Image 1 (tube, rainbow, N blue to C red):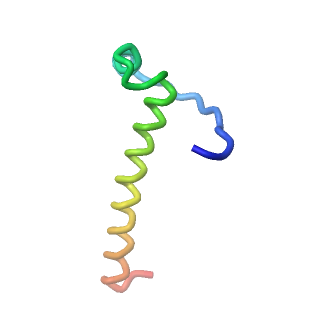
Image 2 (image 1 turned 180 degrees about the horizontal axis):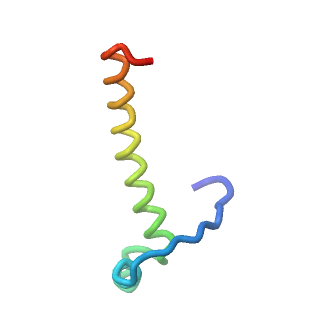
Length: 64
């Protein structure tokens, strides 16, 4: 990822953190931060698609 990173504090339930640690221990990700970045990236791609669908639906129904 290019560009500056921004530090963000997030509170997660302990089981989430324990699972992140298992992913790191299994060497699927180099660290917690990278695992979280990849999860958020996937979430954003899905939501981007949903947003596009919602905007197309509004256009078709005479919205904006």
